Length: 145
Image 1 (cartoon, rainbow, N blue to C red):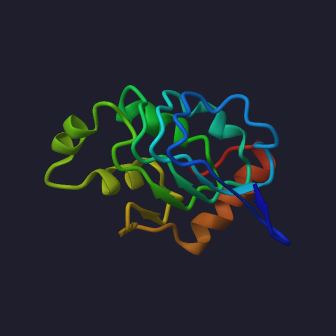
Image 2: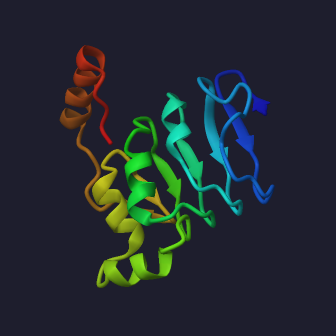
Image 3: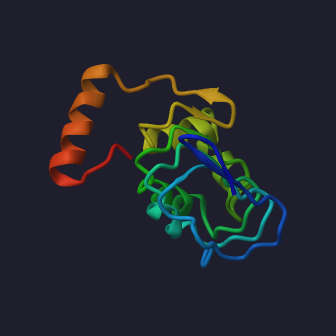
């Protein structure tokens, strides 16, 4: 865990991880997380990372891309995402996305994400949308994704 004055990053690529639990100290302060090239089958614990902005979950073993998107929809601070081959059905998911790309489809489901797999979100949230989201989050605990 590398900690700076206001952020923390955790880099665990290619460690043969099968689960995200338990990783001590993972919860509140992680801003950047790289768990690429592992064998992780569930991303639900990521919802606990309230400050997570940058995530690399590429090349993992989540059963389906739909499960990946549902799990990441709970990561309300997430802005940058590397997702390629995060699920076991990635090739089928990629074909089903045509003529679009998996990254663009992911950003349709995760509206707060501004960049996915190197592609910018073609419909980023406007400032008035962010203001509404912040109000909903403060008042009701509802996030953008």
